[in-house]
Amino acid sequence: MFALLWKINKALKTGIHNLLKTSRGNVGQTVAEILQKINVLDVEFEGNLSTMLAPIWCTNQYWFRVKGKVKAMIVEYGSPTLFLTISCAEYDSADIQYLRKVNNAPQSYSISRLYTEDPVSVSRQFSYKFKDFFNIVILQRGVLGKVEHYYVKKEYQMHGASHYHIFLWIENAAVVGIDRPEVCSFIQDRISCHIPDRNTSPDLNFLVTKHQMHKCSKYCKQNIKVGKTYVSRCRFDFPRPVRNSICINDVENSLKSCNKIYYLKRNEKEVRVNDYNPLLLKLWHANIDLQYIAKRSLSLTEYVTGCH
Image 1: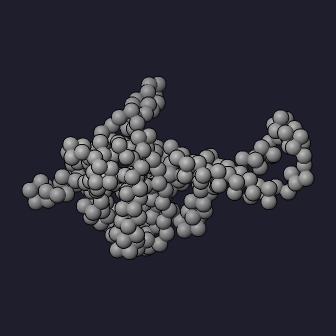
Image 2 (image 1 turned 90 degrees about the vertical axis):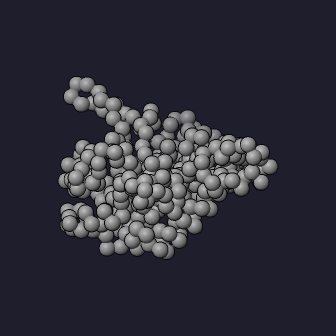
Image 3 (image 1 turned 180 degrees about the vertical axis):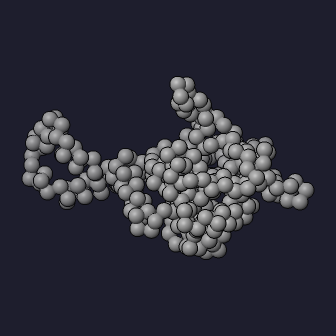
């Protein structure tokens, strides 16, 4: 806690220093004159003051700056190819068994209790694991293709568990509207919603059924007006439609209706499977979500660079 307060205090000092350097119109003014501007709600002066909060993580000013950087990347490099979310299996991950020894926890403690007793250590361990996983598997080995550019954001849920949102720009990726057949192949080579056979692929079957099955809750349910009535729908588009083959939708209409640009081949048992990459899932052993996003990058930028 003290370390966090120290970082915030340091960031605030940096913001004040930058404000004094850049806001020349306020140099030489007395405290009384500055207070007068605050009292009369001087919009320009208030805007200048708010910039000192930009270095402080999770303030509106901070995310405004980050959002600008991501949008600049999209303008410079084009739309990201893939949107990847990686979560932590905080309640049943064998990776945190070490906390029994570190915290002298009784053997009777379950993994979930180890997590709830020391969420800070779990978050730190998850960060180290993610860093190695991302650098080695995604960047160096190029499981999803050669990554030209990327943006990573770490988020925390209400109970303290962390997860990562990632934009990936893949070299020579197929583009919707230009390389339609190649887009289908590109997606199918990297993204799946298949539940493997329990006998032929027991490990992957276990991981998919344990980590990739979406269950709707208050978090994802939202009321959407259809005609004169409101209908409750999942904002993650579950359950997803059954398809005999991959389907690429019209991009413009999909963006207007907030529907997915594509739908994978999917049977009735797979309508609640969160799309994943088989190799990433086998290596990570926790929930992942992988999407080909094409032109949806701007709308996703608002989601990724917001403070949830």
